[in-house]
Structure formats: structure tokens, C-alpha cells
Image (tube, rainbow, N blue to C red; front, side):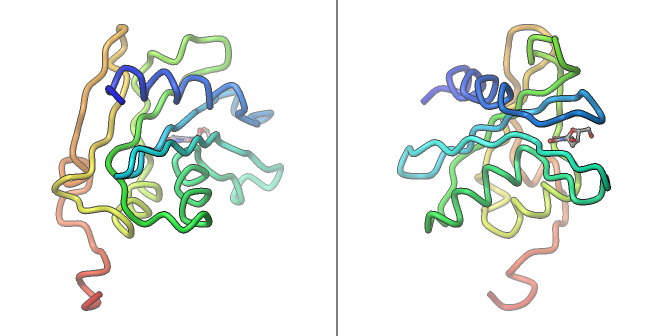
Length: 138
Ligand code: THU
């Protein structure tokens, strides 16, 4: 699947966002190395802290399904009512979750660039010198 197609899957996932507090809805589409797509949305909470980002929802669904090998993730976010083409880079916690399951040199993060195009980054570009399983000999 192309980056443009994966980003349009992220926009579809964004429609499921539960965002009564921030009104900032995010969708993610995570592609496994075998080509399977897992969707995720952000799910907020009245206590704020338990809020789960779209990216982690996608990862946790995939990992629950037994997936461990990931190729790329696309993320579409913005205030409710916008088209999902605004830049929405993953938060630090989500970058760390990616670090757990992905090779930072090869895993790709696809983001909207504010127009109707996509930019692609490696996890290493967005999380330089990341701490991961390698640090614990895993
Ligand atoms: N959020 C995500 O789901 N992913 C991101 O990449 C950035 C932030 C969510 C968390 C919260 O529900 C809302 O966006 C505002 O922070």
C-alpha cells in the first residue's frame, strides 16, 4: 500500500476518535510487514491521563493479534471538522511504544504535510538515540 493510501486509511480511522475534551481527533493506520492494516483512534478520558493516542490504539490492537513485525504507520489528525491534512506528529509516549516493536532505522512514519501530500520519516529521525529492547539485551 502506498503512503497516500495508508494516510487515507488513517483518515478513515480518525472518524472513530472519542474526543469530547480536546476535540482534536487523530487516526492511525499501521501496516505490518505482511501488509495487514491495523487502525486506531484516540480515546479520551474524563480523568485526562488515561487517554490513549491513535497510534498506541493501533499498536495495541495489532500486538494483541500476535503481530510483531511492522513496516510503517500513517497518522492523520487535527481539530474536529478539519480534513486530516494538518501535520500531526506522534507524541513522545507513542514514539517510545514504536521503539519497543520497530527497527528505528527502517520503520517509517507517514505524516500529512499541511497540503494534500505526505512526508515520510524513519523512527530514528523522530526519536534519535532512543532507548529500546537492545539496551536490555533483548
Ligand atoms: N493525540 C494522538 O492521538 N496522537 C498524536 O500523535 C498526538 C495527540 C491525541 C491525544 C489527545 O486525545 C488529543 O490528541 C489531544 O492531545
